[in-house]
Length: 379
Image (cartoon, rainbow, N blue to C red; front, side, top):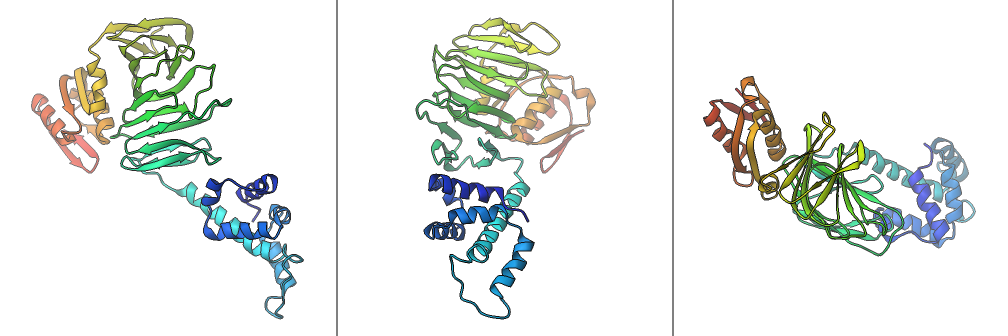
Protein backbone atom coordinates (compact mmCIF):
# COMPACT_ATOMS: atom_id res chain seq x y z
CA UNK A 1 0.00 0.00 0.00
CA UNK A 2 1.52 3.32 -1.05
CA UNK A 3 1.17 6.53 0.96
CA UNK A 4 -2.16 8.29 0.67
CA UNK A 5 -1.98 11.61 -1.22
CA UNK A 6 -4.69 13.20 0.95
CA UNK A 7 -2.77 12.47 4.12
CA UNK A 8 0.48 13.68 2.56
CA UNK A 9 -1.19 16.94 1.50
CA UNK A 10 -2.55 17.56 5.00
CA UNK A 11 0.84 16.99 6.61
CA UNK A 12 2.51 19.21 3.98
CA UNK A 13 0.01 21.97 4.71
CA UNK A 14 0.67 21.85 8.45
CA UNK A 15 4.47 21.74 7.95
CA UNK A 16 4.29 24.66 5.52
CA UNK A 17 1.75 26.89 7.30
CA UNK A 18 2.06 25.70 10.85
CA UNK A 19 -1.64 24.90 10.92
CA UNK A 20 -4.58 23.61 8.87
CA UNK A 21 -7.92 25.36 8.39
CA UNK A 22 -10.56 24.48 10.94
CA UNK A 23 -13.10 23.30 8.38
CA UNK A 24 -10.78 20.61 7.04
CA UNK A 25 -9.83 19.44 10.53
CA UNK A 26 -13.50 19.06 11.48
CA UNK A 27 -13.97 16.65 8.57
CA UNK A 28 -11.55 14.22 10.25
CA UNK A 29 -12.57 11.73 12.90
CA UNK A 30 -11.77 12.42 16.55
CA UNK A 31 -9.00 9.79 16.45
CA UNK A 32 -7.43 11.38 13.38
CA UNK A 33 -7.49 14.84 14.94
CA UNK A 34 -5.93 13.58 18.16
CA UNK A 35 -3.13 11.77 16.32
CA UNK A 36 -2.24 14.83 14.24
CA UNK A 37 -2.30 17.00 17.38
CA UNK A 38 -0.02 14.52 19.17
CA UNK A 39 2.43 14.62 16.26
CA UNK A 40 2.40 18.45 16.40
CA UNK A 41 2.87 18.56 20.18
CA UNK A 42 5.93 16.32 19.93
CA UNK A 43 7.49 18.40 17.15
CA UNK A 44 7.59 15.46 14.76
CA UNK A 45 5.68 16.80 11.78
CA UNK A 46 8.63 16.73 9.37
CA UNK A 47 9.60 13.20 10.39
CA UNK A 48 5.99 12.09 9.98
CA UNK A 49 5.79 13.61 6.52
CA UNK A 50 9.00 11.98 5.34
CA UNK A 51 7.88 8.66 6.73
CA UNK A 52 4.37 8.59 5.33
CA UNK A 53 5.58 9.65 1.86
CA UNK A 54 7.64 6.47 1.68
CA UNK A 55 5.17 4.27 3.50
CA UNK A 56 4.90 0.66 2.36
CA UNK A 57 2.68 -1.46 4.57
CA UNK A 58 4.16 -4.91 4.05
CA UNK A 59 7.84 -3.96 4.34
CA UNK A 60 7.40 -1.65 7.34
CA UNK A 61 5.18 -4.10 9.20
CA UNK A 62 7.90 -6.72 9.12
CA UNK A 63 10.47 -4.10 10.13
CA UNK A 64 8.25 -2.89 12.93
CA UNK A 65 7.87 -6.39 14.38
CA UNK A 66 11.63 -6.87 14.39
CA UNK A 67 12.30 -3.50 16.03
CA UNK A 68 9.85 -3.77 18.90
CA UNK A 69 9.93 -7.60 19.19
CA UNK A 70 6.21 -7.76 19.80
CA UNK A 71 5.89 -11.46 20.58
CA UNK A 72 9.15 -12.20 22.41
CA UNK A 73 10.26 -9.41 24.65
CA UNK A 74 8.38 -6.47 26.13
CA UNK A 75 10.14 -3.19 25.44
CA UNK A 76 9.93 0.38 26.65
CA UNK A 77 9.64 2.58 23.59
CA UNK A 78 11.52 5.88 23.48
CA UNK A 79 8.94 8.01 21.60
CA UNK A 80 11.42 10.27 19.78
CA UNK A 81 14.08 7.67 18.95
CA UNK A 82 11.88 5.05 17.37
CA UNK A 83 8.88 7.14 16.48
CA UNK A 84 9.19 6.31 12.80
CA UNK A 85 9.11 2.59 13.54
CA UNK A 86 6.20 2.45 15.95
CA UNK A 87 4.03 5.47 16.64
CA UNK A 88 4.08 6.92 13.14
CA UNK A 89 3.65 3.52 11.53
CA UNK A 90 0.72 2.42 13.62
CA UNK A 91 -0.98 5.80 13.72
CA UNK A 92 -0.35 6.91 10.17
CA UNK A 93 -0.97 3.48 8.70
CA UNK A 94 -4.40 3.62 10.31
CA UNK A 95 -4.87 7.11 8.91
CA UNK A 96 -3.92 5.88 5.44
CA UNK A 97 -6.50 3.14 5.78
CA UNK A 98 -9.16 5.58 6.96
CA UNK A 99 -8.46 8.02 4.14
CA UNK A 100 -8.49 5.26 1.54
CA UNK A 101 -11.66 3.79 3.02
CA UNK A 102 -13.35 7.19 2.86
CA UNK A 103 -12.24 7.69 -0.72
CA UNK A 104 -13.50 4.25 -1.76
CA UNK A 105 -16.78 4.86 0.05
CA UNK A 106 -17.28 8.21 -1.67
CA UNK A 107 -16.49 6.65 -5.03
CA UNK A 108 -19.01 3.88 -4.48
CA UNK A 109 -21.73 6.16 -3.07
CA UNK A 110 -24.80 5.94 -5.26
CA UNK A 111 -26.58 9.26 -5.67
CA UNK A 112 -30.37 8.88 -5.87
CA UNK A 113 -31.95 9.81 -9.21
CA UNK A 114 -34.25 12.30 -7.50
CA UNK A 115 -31.49 14.14 -5.58
CA UNK A 116 -30.69 17.82 -6.15
CA UNK A 117 -26.91 17.88 -6.59
CA UNK A 118 -24.49 20.74 -5.95
CA UNK A 119 -21.11 20.04 -7.56
CA UNK A 120 -18.44 22.02 -5.69
CA UNK A 121 -15.20 23.52 -7.03
CA UNK A 122 -13.18 20.42 -6.14
CA UNK A 123 -15.63 17.98 -7.73
CA UNK A 124 -17.29 16.93 -4.47
CA UNK A 125 -21.06 16.46 -4.70
CA UNK A 126 -23.32 17.85 -1.99
CA UNK A 127 -26.94 16.72 -1.82
CA UNK A 128 -29.44 19.54 -1.24
CA UNK A 129 -32.54 18.50 0.67
CA UNK A 130 -35.45 20.76 -0.43
CA UNK A 131 -36.53 20.92 3.21
CA UNK A 132 -33.03 21.40 4.62
CA UNK A 133 -30.94 24.27 5.97
CA UNK A 134 -27.16 24.30 5.57
CA UNK A 135 -24.09 26.35 4.66
CA UNK A 136 -21.89 25.87 1.60
CA UNK A 137 -18.22 26.12 2.58
CA UNK A 138 -15.15 26.57 0.37
CA UNK A 139 -11.95 24.58 0.82
CA UNK A 140 -10.43 27.37 2.94
CA UNK A 141 -13.38 27.28 5.35
CA UNK A 142 -15.11 30.42 4.04
CA UNK A 143 -18.90 30.33 3.83
CA UNK A 144 -19.91 31.22 0.24
CA UNK A 145 -23.60 30.35 0.28
CA UNK A 146 -26.45 29.23 2.48
CA UNK A 147 -29.38 26.98 1.70
CA UNK A 148 -32.81 27.36 3.20
CA UNK A 149 -35.33 24.83 1.96
CA UNK A 150 -35.84 25.16 -1.81
CA UNK A 151 -33.42 28.04 -2.30
CA UNK A 152 -29.65 28.59 -2.16
CA UNK A 153 -28.15 32.08 -1.88
CA UNK A 154 -24.57 33.06 -2.65
CA UNK A 155 -22.89 36.08 -1.13
CA UNK A 156 -20.37 38.60 -2.44
CA UNK A 157 -17.21 38.73 -0.31
CA UNK A 158 -15.11 41.44 -1.95
CA UNK A 159 -13.14 41.30 -5.18
CA UNK A 160 -11.66 38.09 -6.56
CA UNK A 161 -9.18 37.50 -9.40
CA UNK A 162 -10.06 33.91 -10.27
CA UNK A 163 -13.37 32.32 -11.24
CA UNK A 164 -14.44 29.37 -9.09
CA UNK A 165 -17.44 27.44 -10.38
CA UNK A 166 -20.26 25.50 -8.76
CA UNK A 167 -22.85 23.52 -10.72
CA UNK A 168 -26.36 22.69 -9.62
CA UNK A 169 -28.28 19.76 -11.12
CA UNK A 170 -32.05 19.54 -10.74
CA UNK A 171 -33.63 16.09 -11.29
CA UNK A 172 -36.95 15.35 -12.95
CA UNK A 173 -39.95 16.18 -10.78
CA UNK A 174 -38.29 19.06 -8.87
CA UNK A 175 -37.56 22.77 -9.19
CA UNK A 176 -35.10 24.97 -7.30
CA UNK A 177 -34.11 28.61 -6.87
CA UNK A 178 -30.63 30.15 -6.81
CA UNK A 179 -29.57 33.68 -5.91
CA UNK A 180 -26.16 34.37 -7.46
CA UNK A 181 -23.52 36.53 -5.78
CA UNK A 182 -24.65 39.64 -7.75
CA UNK A 183 -28.25 39.26 -6.59
CA UNK A 184 -29.51 37.69 -9.83
CA UNK A 185 -32.32 35.19 -9.17
CA UNK A 186 -32.50 31.98 -11.19
CA UNK A 187 -35.51 29.65 -11.04
CA UNK A 188 -34.47 26.18 -12.23
CA UNK A 189 -36.95 23.81 -13.88
CA UNK A 190 -36.91 20.01 -13.67
CA UNK A 191 -34.16 18.12 -15.49
CA UNK A 192 -31.89 21.17 -15.71
CA UNK A 193 -28.35 22.15 -14.71
CA UNK A 194 -26.60 25.50 -14.30
CA UNK A 195 -22.85 26.10 -14.03
CA UNK A 196 -21.99 29.48 -12.52
CA UNK A 197 -19.17 31.33 -10.69
CA UNK A 198 -19.32 31.38 -6.92
CA UNK A 199 -18.43 35.06 -7.35
CA UNK A 200 -18.15 37.19 -10.48
CA UNK A 201 -14.98 39.11 -11.39
CA UNK A 202 -14.98 42.88 -11.73
CA UNK A 203 -14.43 44.00 -15.31
CA UNK A 204 -15.68 40.75 -16.87
CA UNK A 205 -19.05 39.58 -18.19
CA UNK A 206 -21.21 37.62 -15.80
CA UNK A 207 -21.41 34.29 -17.62
CA UNK A 208 -23.35 31.14 -16.73
CA UNK A 209 -23.92 27.89 -18.64
CA UNK A 210 -27.42 26.39 -18.84
CA UNK A 211 -28.71 23.00 -19.90
CA UNK A 212 -32.44 22.64 -19.53
CA UNK A 213 -34.79 25.45 -18.53
CA UNK A 214 -34.52 28.43 -16.19
CA UNK A 215 -36.12 31.82 -15.58
CA UNK A 216 -33.65 34.66 -14.94
CA UNK A 217 -34.33 37.88 -13.03
CA UNK A 218 -31.01 39.61 -13.68
CA UNK A 219 -29.63 42.35 -11.44
CA UNK A 220 -28.89 45.40 -13.60
CA UNK A 221 -25.20 46.19 -14.09
CA UNK A 222 -24.26 48.15 -17.23
CA UNK A 223 -20.55 47.54 -16.70
CA UNK A 224 -20.96 43.77 -16.48
CA UNK A 225 -23.37 42.24 -19.05
CA UNK A 226 -25.01 38.97 -18.03
CA UNK A 227 -24.64 36.11 -20.52
CA UNK A 228 -26.51 32.80 -20.52
CA UNK A 229 -24.65 30.27 -22.67
CA UNK A 230 -26.44 27.25 -24.15
CA UNK A 231 -25.36 24.59 -26.62
CA UNK A 232 -26.46 26.66 -29.63
CA UNK A 233 -27.51 30.17 -28.60
CA UNK A 234 -26.22 32.81 -26.19
CA UNK A 235 -28.46 35.34 -24.43
CA UNK A 236 -26.85 38.65 -23.41
CA UNK A 237 -28.51 41.21 -21.12
CA UNK A 238 -27.75 44.05 -18.73
CA UNK A 239 -30.71 43.56 -16.41
CA UNK A 240 -34.02 41.98 -17.28
CA UNK A 241 -36.45 39.09 -16.83
CA UNK A 242 -36.52 36.24 -19.33
CA UNK A 243 -36.94 32.48 -19.72
CA UNK A 244 -34.51 30.17 -21.53
CA UNK A 245 -35.28 26.58 -22.52
CA UNK A 246 -32.38 24.49 -23.85
CA UNK A 247 -33.03 20.82 -23.16
CA UNK A 248 -30.65 18.59 -25.10
CA UNK A 249 -33.49 16.36 -26.29
CA UNK A 250 -35.40 19.34 -27.75
CA UNK A 251 -34.68 20.48 -31.31
CA UNK A 252 -35.30 24.15 -30.45
CA UNK A 253 -33.67 26.50 -27.98
CA UNK A 254 -36.10 29.25 -26.91
CA UNK A 255 -35.62 32.57 -25.15
CA UNK A 256 -38.78 34.40 -24.07
CA UNK A 257 -38.48 38.00 -22.90
CA UNK A 258 -40.76 39.21 -20.12
CA UNK A 259 -39.15 42.54 -19.24
CA UNK A 260 -36.28 44.70 -20.51
CA UNK A 261 -34.31 43.69 -23.61
CA UNK A 262 -31.97 40.89 -24.63
CA UNK A 263 -29.56 40.19 -27.45
CA UNK A 264 -29.50 36.70 -28.94
CA UNK A 265 -26.61 35.27 -30.93
CA UNK A 266 -25.93 31.98 -32.67
CA UNK A 267 -22.89 30.30 -31.13
CA UNK A 268 -21.59 29.67 -34.66
CA UNK A 269 -22.17 33.31 -35.66
CA UNK A 270 -21.40 35.32 -32.48
CA UNK A 271 -21.19 38.70 -34.26
CA UNK A 272 -24.74 38.48 -35.65
CA UNK A 273 -27.22 39.57 -32.98
CA UNK A 274 -31.01 39.43 -32.78
CA UNK A 275 -32.79 41.78 -30.37
CA UNK A 276 -35.98 40.88 -28.51
CA UNK A 277 -38.55 43.19 -26.97
CA UNK A 278 -40.94 42.15 -24.16
CA UNK A 279 -43.51 39.61 -25.32
CA UNK A 280 -41.26 38.07 -27.97
CA UNK A 281 -39.73 34.60 -28.28
CA UNK A 282 -36.46 33.93 -30.09
CA UNK A 283 -35.94 30.37 -31.36
CA UNK A 284 -32.70 28.77 -32.52
CA UNK A 285 -32.61 25.47 -34.38
CA UNK A 286 -29.50 23.66 -35.61
CA UNK A 287 -31.14 23.22 -39.02
CA UNK A 288 -31.48 26.98 -39.52
CA UNK A 289 -28.96 29.83 -39.57
CA UNK A 290 -31.39 32.57 -38.52
CA UNK A 291 -32.94 33.03 -35.09
CA UNK A 292 -36.72 33.14 -35.56
CA UNK A 293 -38.66 35.78 -33.59
CA UNK A 294 -42.39 35.89 -32.90
CA UNK A 295 -44.92 37.39 -30.48
CA UNK A 296 -46.10 35.05 -27.69
CA UNK A 297 -48.06 35.00 -24.46
CA UNK A 298 -45.16 34.90 -22.01
CA UNK A 299 -47.32 33.30 -19.31
CA UNK A 300 -47.32 30.05 -21.27
CA UNK A 301 -43.54 29.93 -20.90
CA UNK A 302 -43.14 31.09 -17.31
CA UNK A 303 -46.04 29.60 -15.33
CA UNK A 304 -44.03 26.42 -14.74
CA UNK A 305 -42.53 28.27 -11.75
CA UNK A 306 -45.90 27.96 -9.98
CA UNK A 307 -46.41 24.34 -11.08
CA UNK A 308 -48.45 25.08 -14.21
CA UNK A 309 -47.95 22.82 -17.26
CA UNK A 310 -49.33 24.50 -20.37
CA UNK A 311 -49.85 22.90 -23.79
CA UNK A 312 -50.82 25.00 -26.81
CA UNK A 313 -51.20 23.01 -30.03
CA UNK A 314 -48.56 20.66 -28.66
CA UNK A 315 -47.90 17.24 -30.23
CA UNK A 316 -48.46 14.31 -27.88
CA UNK A 317 -44.85 13.14 -28.38
CA UNK A 318 -43.69 16.47 -26.92
CA UNK A 319 -46.29 16.34 -24.17
CA UNK A 320 -44.86 12.99 -23.06
CA UNK A 321 -41.39 14.50 -22.66
CA UNK A 322 -42.73 17.40 -20.60
CA UNK A 323 -44.81 15.15 -18.36
CA UNK A 324 -41.81 12.88 -17.76
CA UNK A 325 -39.73 15.87 -16.62
CA UNK A 326 -42.46 17.36 -14.47
CA UNK A 327 -43.57 14.17 -12.70
CA UNK A 328 -40.32 12.15 -12.83
CA UNK A 329 -41.95 9.21 -14.62
CA UNK A 330 -41.25 7.15 -17.75
CA UNK A 331 -44.08 6.97 -20.29
CA UNK A 332 -44.16 4.21 -22.91
CA UNK A 333 -46.71 5.03 -25.60
CA UNK A 334 -47.90 1.91 -27.40
CA UNK A 335 -50.60 3.79 -29.30
CA UNK A 336 -48.36 5.28 -31.99
CA UNK A 337 -51.13 7.15 -33.81
CA UNK A 338 -51.22 9.49 -30.80
CA UNK A 339 -47.70 10.85 -31.26
CA UNK A 340 -48.65 13.60 -33.71
CA UNK A 341 -52.02 14.43 -32.15
CA UNK A 342 -52.05 18.01 -30.81
CA UNK A 343 -53.53 19.16 -27.53
CA UNK A 344 -54.52 22.42 -25.84
CA UNK A 345 -54.55 21.94 -22.09
CA UNK A 346 -53.17 23.18 -18.79
CA UNK A 347 -52.54 21.38 -15.50
CA UNK A 348 -50.87 22.16 -12.21
CA UNK A 349 -48.47 19.47 -11.02
CA UNK A 350 -48.79 20.71 -7.43
CA UNK A 351 -52.51 19.94 -7.52
CA UNK A 352 -53.08 17.23 -10.12
CA UNK A 353 -51.27 13.89 -10.16
CA UNK A 354 -49.90 12.29 -13.34
CA UNK A 355 -52.81 9.83 -13.15
CA UNK A 356 -55.33 12.67 -13.19
CA UNK A 357 -53.55 14.39 -16.09
CA UNK A 358 -53.53 11.24 -18.23
CA UNK A 359 -57.10 10.41 -17.27
CA UNK A 360 -58.27 13.81 -18.50
CA UNK A 361 -56.35 13.47 -21.77
CA UNK A 362 -57.56 9.89 -22.32
CA UNK A 363 -61.16 11.10 -22.39
CA UNK A 364 -60.27 13.36 -25.33
CA UNK A 365 -58.31 10.84 -27.42
CA UNK A 366 -59.80 7.58 -26.11
CA UNK A 367 -56.77 5.72 -24.78
CA UNK A 368 -56.09 3.68 -21.65
CA UNK A 369 -52.99 3.49 -19.48
CA UNK A 370 -51.51 1.42 -16.70
CA UNK A 371 -49.03 2.51 -14.03
CA UNK A 372 -46.50 0.50 -12.05
CA UNK A 373 -44.24 2.61 -9.85
CA UNK A 374 -42.76 5.27 -12.10
CA UNK A 375 -43.42 3.26 -15.28
CA UNK A 376 -46.52 4.22 -17.31
CA UNK A 377 -47.76 2.37 -20.39
CA UNK A 378 -50.32 3.90 -22.77
CA UNK A 379 -52.44 1.49 -24.83
